[in-house]
Length: 179
Image (cartoon, rainbow, N blue to C red; front, side):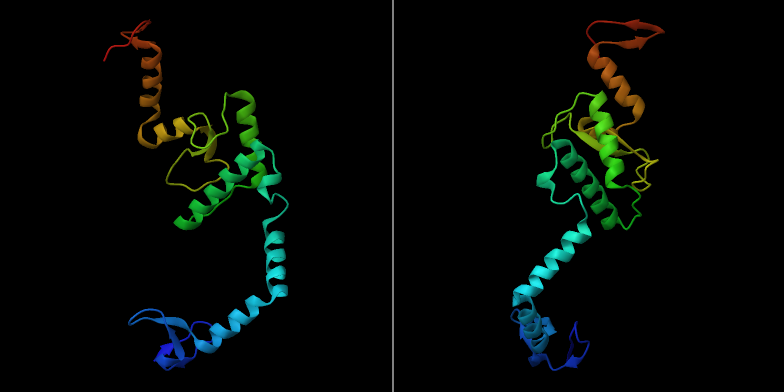
């Protein structure tokens, strides 16, 4: 005996399609036939696509956006997907992310390319909290990766040592950094 998911009726196992040697589908044969007939109807598919387009809103499709708008669009959807998987609340809007990214890009060097160190990225200030407007800022991808592992002080010390500017004994030392 097996319970069909769509119709919730308990039926004989032979009324379900076999999907493996000892596995059977979660739908009974009549429900599978009904679903395939409905999906084959072109009007149904057209209507479903139209509904999905309307649900996505005015920002879709992303190929009609500028590069900066598309980057903000991707960052927004990636963050929302992470929250859904973790079961956390999500407080950001596309407009807020787009504004934050454009503000960051207008005042910082940036490169809009996949996995480039200077690509803008959304960083949560407190990683235990969700993506909310008071917990998110836009930073470079390389900075976000570094903040994932190290503290703010360690990151600043690294940058100072890399530039050869590290304070030792109260005075600023310039030149090659030694470890």
